[in-house]
Image (tube, rainbow, N blue to C red):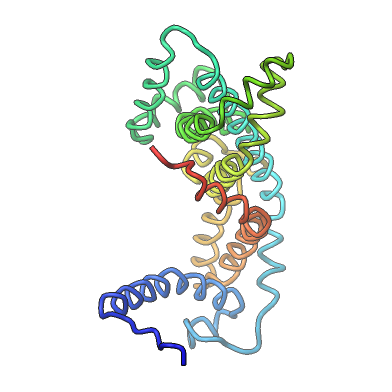
Length: 280
C-alpha cells in the first residue's frame, strides 16, 4: 500500500496564504469580465454577479472607440521592443567579448542609472524631447526615451547571460575564421534566445501598458495609444451613463493581445527565468 502523503501545519498555512493571494489576483479579472457584458441597469442591480442576457454590444461599441489606437500602440511597442533587444544584446556582447579601457567603469555607470527613479528624470526628459527636439505628437518622442530608459536593465540581464556561455565555442569559431558579427549572430544570439524572449516579453508588456509618458507626448487623437484613450473613455462614459461596461469591454479587448503573445512565448519566457539569467 502506498503511503498517504501528510502535510505539516506550515505547508497548510503556506497553501492557504498562496490561495488567498491567488484570489486577490484573479478577482479583478473576474470583475472585469463580468462587468464587460452588463447593461447599465444590470451593473447597478447586480454589480459583481453574472447577469443574463449578456450585452455583446458593449464590445462592438468599445471597438469603435479604440480600433485605431491599437495600431498606434503596436507600432510604438514593437519598435521599442526591437530596439531594446538589438541594442542591449549588441552592447552586452561587446561588454562580454571585447577588451577595452574603462569597460568596467562604463558598465558600473549603466548599473548606477538603475538606482535613479524614473520620476526624477521626467521633467528634464520632457524638456529634452518636447522643447529641444520638438518631438511632441510623434511616435519617436515616445519610442526613443523609453528605449533609453529600458537599456540599462536589459544590458545587465543579457550580459549576465552571455557571461555564462562557454568560451570554447567562441574560440573554436574564431580559429575557423568567424568575424565578430558572425560570432554575435550565429552563436551569441542563437544561444541566448531564452533570455531574449524573456527580456522581449517584459519590454513589450511594459511599453504596451505605459500610460504616463505617452500621455505627456501624444496630444492629437490620431496618435494616442490605447491606454490613454481607454482612460478618457472610462471617465467620459461614466459621467454620461453612470456605467463603465463599455469601457471595461475595451479593457478586455486591449488585454487579449498580451494573453495571445504570452501563450506563444510562455515556454521561452519560463526557460529564460530558470536558466540563470537573474543570477548575480
